[in-house]
Length: 280
Ligand code: 6PG
Image (cartoon, rainbow, N blue to C red; front, side, top):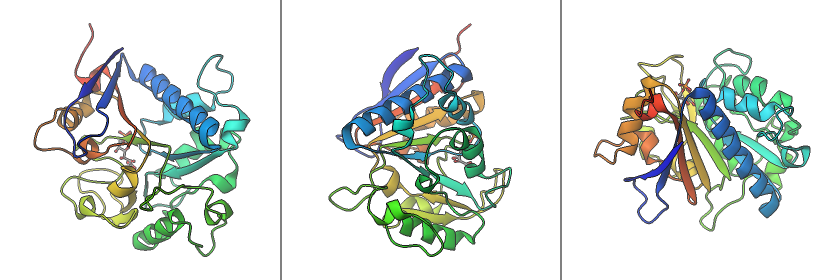
């Protein structure tokens, strides 16, 4: 494993971006699960709860599976004390029903949430089955602790789900993100108006042109992502190499994934293929 820092980014004065590079996808999943578990334990010990936003796509599935595997001695498995204090949000969702094979919620549910003792009332999914603008508005309201018709989210209304900073931004303890080959993260796509959003925490975005599934999305925005304590970006495979280089290279053409900064920590977990440091 090699560790270092990458220059660049729009948040001068914040901590440098860390890079953790491991041999392959399995090692990246183990590293990601370990960082997730460590953040969860620290958050519960310090503040009595762990507020996390999960990533979609396919890459995090292996990390979720490790987190769900209580049989792994010395592994990332967390106890019921931690899961019971965990509040689960999502960085983005495809506008499909929750039982669709394309649903980020479904992936996270099957790989992780159905297999750990996180209370169902502490899982706040994006309602991909609704019209995009409606789903985004309802998710934004939920994040703000407002009552949302038809949603049982008592913990949100009691202010127990997402703490706020002094200016009112939602403070996730840990945000897990992926990267697309075009440099997108969550559903913040290069060159789209959502990148400029400064007020809303969740917005609807049009279906991406060059990515499947070609359906509209709902995504957290930079103001929500950047208010997080810790951000972990997970990228695996050679098809991510150019995007990783653009994001961490410090050049002028910064893709959305390279712009996200956690307040206390931003760490990219990469395998050699994504990092461009092939080992022979
Ligand atoms: C989504 C995402 C997206 C994803 C990247 C990487 O819903 O598609 O949240 O940002 O993380 O596209 O996806 P893969 O892990 O499938 O490569």
